[in-house]
Image 1 (cartoon, one colour):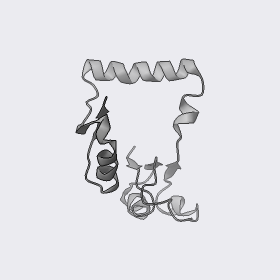
Image 2 (image 1 turned 180 degrees about the vertical axis):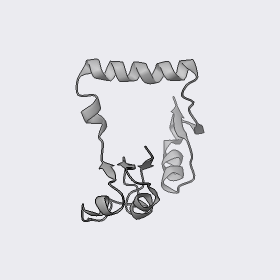
Image 3 (image 1 turned 90 degrees about the horizontal axis):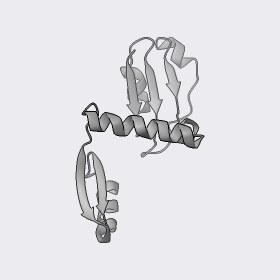
Length: 116
């Protein structure tokens, strides 16, 4: 199954939908440009029986046991080299305002770390 992960929202939603093959899925996990516009659900059918989901981390870690299991999976994948992190910017905690400016100005890729 083809999947598009869209963390931008308003400005990319239509392009994300249009890029999918039949039975593809769009996962909306953010809305940095604002929420996607309202749309008629039947468009998912006309574009090829598409799937749309808007997950929230809260629903995937509802219980502490689930949080620990999921965190263990992710940290295990990192330790095994199955998941690689891209760290795009590291700044001292005292420069947190600069980190925010970089994020707001879309000058970042990967993770942004603030080092205490």
